[in-house]
Image (cartoon, rainbow, N blue to C red; front, top):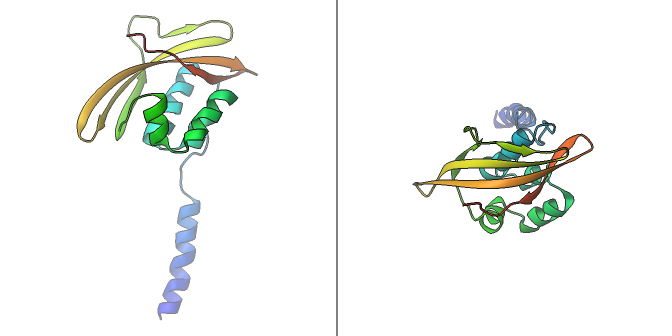
Length: 144
């Protein structure tokens, strides 16, 4: 009886894991704000370094992949650690995006928790356009 039960359960489990709805890549590459939000969401909430690096320039992707873990990237590149975080672009009356022909600078606000403490932070990201898609090129110095 146990054999038959295992023969039924194992294929069902395999089908369920194959049907998982997680996205392995960031698809909207034509909007710099969405790319920036998706980058940080992949890094901080999904904990997926490969997905985050997929929207970076080759130089920045190499640096991000060097650290291997999202916690190391967050600590060393951004000096920010979160258990869970809400990420949103600057939508106040000030310029959200300073966009030129093939460059954009995006300001992003972080509101999250780390070990039960609430933390807020701001980062500025530089993006460049390559072949009609935007890629993250640089992490800019903190303006504040």
